[in-house]
Structure formats: structure tokens, C-alpha cells
Length: 470
Image (cartoon, rainbow, N blue to C red; front, side):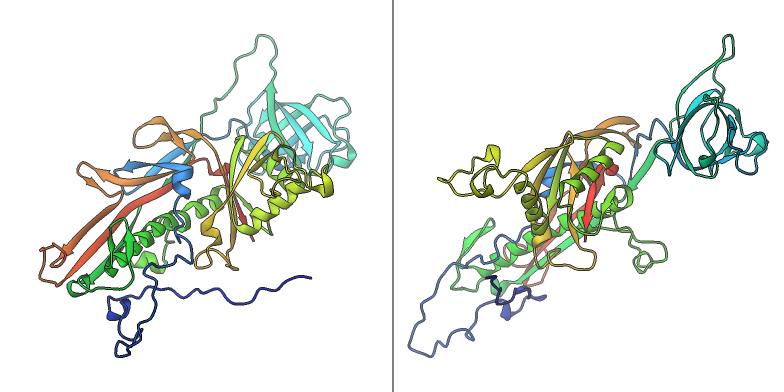
């Protein structure tokens, strides 16, 4: 019989905007005019865990300084070009489909191309797996059309009647020249892809009145800033944790301000976070979690078409995590009742391990980890609109051309750039001001603690990343 969960998840924040007496435990909780003293626990119980979602960027990348408002880098383009949706035209005229048996045809690439004279090409029918032709380019831009080139086929039978009206995929596989001829006409220049991102300034603020700093409480506080029965240390510590979480979330969720948007009108520019960079340049899996080997085979085929990076890390929410466990568990059923998982040694004398850390498929290694940010019900957990179930990040580093340094450099696939120059380092700044707590920088009877960072995330080689959306 299936069970039913009762009760609700509390999503009400515990923090308030101002420093008020309601932050502190007052007489409303206990009636001190009553002679009966309640039994109290002096330590807070951490019922929601650490509530820190940080760690993803520290695990997947590194941080390095930046001295500009703009980051630009170039990534290597494709060495070879494939043209899809090409039409076949009659030769020597440029109009109409060829006649069955024609062994010289005109290919309409649909746009400007880099095919050159005497290059050999493959023509594959996009609708017929058994239809493929090979030929050599004998003319470029016949009839003065830059989108066209003429191909002399190697097969004597020429074009089949069933192919004359179909579309073809075309790519160059070599070249052939007669003896004593001149060299190749025309040269190809590398065409790198240029990417850019801008850092964003993130701030946080904490304030407490001097009087409240000297207020005794019955709850004992233990934080890196200090310990004892001083409640404002708890607030200060929570502000720092909230700031740390916001730094990571801004690098993940950030988007650029579009032209004519309200944010742009306010003088703000935004920054491209991890999700946006994958959606723009990477691979998007929508419609649910890949939960069968056939789904991962589809991903493997896409990885073959991209950078073919063998090591890949999956950071997923709980439902995706369990889907992968279920998929892998069904692959081995040689033990009693199907509970043997090979190297995991799930025998009857031990607790059954139904969790998997990774697997290998098609020469690619996939390692999975549950991502707390996607599970937290006050953050990404439980979203319906725009839900993200996970991301897949390639492991290791890659070489990119730094437009500022003017040289090729090795960079982790994910890394964060922060502003720093000479004695101004904006990686993680914090300072205090006011007239309380030892500070004498103003006449305000309070202490203010400021937090600031300025940074941007760079997802290099985003064509190798996946984002999984509902």
C-alpha cells in the first residue's frame, strides 16, 4: 500500500529587513512575572541543514583576476564544414532539377560556401540512407551565383531518378588534380568564434544597533566570528552565508540585460551565467530526464559531434539522481531478486546499496552528483516554469585564445574571473563602519558590515555542455 506524505514544507524566511527588537527574544516568549521557569535548550537545532548551496563552482573550476569591464576569448572553429539542405540543379544551366543519369550537376548550397576548385565531395541524400555520390568540383559560382558549384560525378550512371528532387548533405573529403596543373586556387583562413561576458557587482549589508550588541540572550551562538550568548553574531554570520549563496547563484542564473529592457534603462548590464551560456551555445535536453540507455546513447552521439570529451560530470536534482540509479539497477539482475550490481558487492550480509556514482557508455564516463541548489525548496527545488533538472560539465581544461593577453592559455572549462588591480582586489571584500563595536568611523550608534564582489563566469567550450530542462 502506498503511503501519503502529510504536512507541508515551511518556506517562510526567518530574516526580516530591518534591525528591530523582533530579531531578538523578548518578554513575549516568556512571562517573567510567572514564578515557573521553563526548561530551555541553549543551542539552536539546525533543522534545515547548512542551507548553503555553495561549492559547485569551487568543485568544477577555478578563479583568476580580471582588469576590465569586458572578458573576450576566442574558441577554435571547425576544421571542416558540412552543408545541409543542398539542392541539385541541372548542368550547365542553373535552373530546374537535373535529369536522371546526369553525371555533371550544380549544387546549390543555399548560402556562400568555402568549397574550392578540384576538391572532392560527398553528396548524401538526406532522405535515403542508400543514396550517396562522390564527385570532384569543376566550377565555382557557375552563372555568377556565389551559392553554387559544379560537381562532376565519379559514377557513370549519374544521378538516380529518385534523387533529382531531394535535398543533400555535402562535405569535402579530399581533392584531385591532373598532372602538371597549378596549385589549389584560393586559401582558407581560420574563423574562430568570439565569446564575451561582463562582470557583475554583487553586494550585501548587515547592520546592528550598538545597544543590541550588548543584549544578552538565552540562545548560545557558535559562528566563525565568535561564540557566546550574543545574538547579533548569528545575524552577521547568516548575512555572510546568504552573500556566499548569492555569489554562486548569480554566476549560475545571471542573464544579460537586453537592449531597450527595463534593466538596461536603469544603467545595468547583467552577466551571462552558466545556464544562459549553455542554453545559448550548448546542448539543451528538454521534455524530461534521460532515464534510459537509449537516451544516453543520444547524448553520446551528440558528444561525438562536439568535442568528444570522455570525462563528464552530471550535477542533478533528486528526481534525476534517482532516475539514473533506477536505470543502472535494471542493467544487472544476476543476484538474488535482482540485487547484484557487480563491483558494488551487494550481498545478503550488508546493507543494499542502490546508489551509483557513475557509469561508462560508448567510451564516455559519466559521473553524477546530487546538486543541493536544484533540490532546495526555497531556491530551484520545486519550480515548474523554467525548471532545470541538471547540467553536464566536461572535466579538465582546454586551450583558448585570450584577446587581452594575446596568447593561447589553458583554462578550466568553467572558471570565474574577478576584478583585481594593484591594491584593489574585489574578489571578496568585507569591511565595517559606524560608531559601535570598536568602529569610530561615524556618529551612528550602530555597526555596519559591507560585503562586495565583482565577477563573471566563463563557460569555455560550451558546445560540450548539457542542460536538462523539464
